[in-house]
Image (cartoon, rainbow, N blue to C red; front, side, top):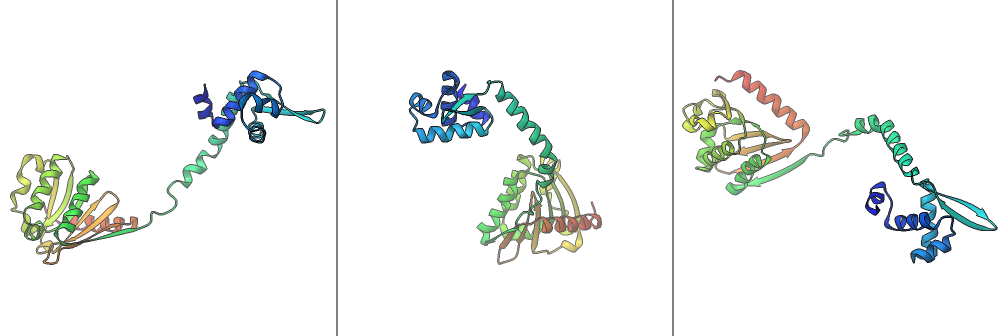
Length: 241
């Protein structure tokens, strides 16, 4: 019973005072304080809160304030009233959702470990992603990790849509059935020798260098994400299967 009253929105003091008053009938704050063991001032304040919530009434007689519980069914009426009030403002609340733009965030990474952290972040998202760049250059810079990345991606069931450099066309990495089934690949000669690769995933865009000085950026920005998706679609239309 107490738990149900908590879910209704009553505090422990309010529950104690309410149940005591319900059993005692019309009472003064002093009487309820004696029965509950709660300080009189706290009891009086609690009773006033219950009056404000509409489940206790009060009246004066011979210069004394008396309190009485409304019929318990009043609790259901209060819940129905609250639900009606919420239903009335629900459309306005839904219109407010997501109206404050997400603040942009940028993380910078250096060295091989930093670049590997970017690749791991792509996997940790666990969602399909877009990519454009040169796998050949990435292999040169990161040795075998790009191959491990592809294997892990396939094992996790993450789909890839990519525009690779034309020089990557003969790369056997995507021939494995499990990897091939999770990959939609096209090729573009303009990306040959590209020393920067781009991952578009979740709410983020990652730029990763493949040159001698390895570095990368992860940017979480709705405008940059939107722009990079548009760039990818332009490259996808130009690329060849």
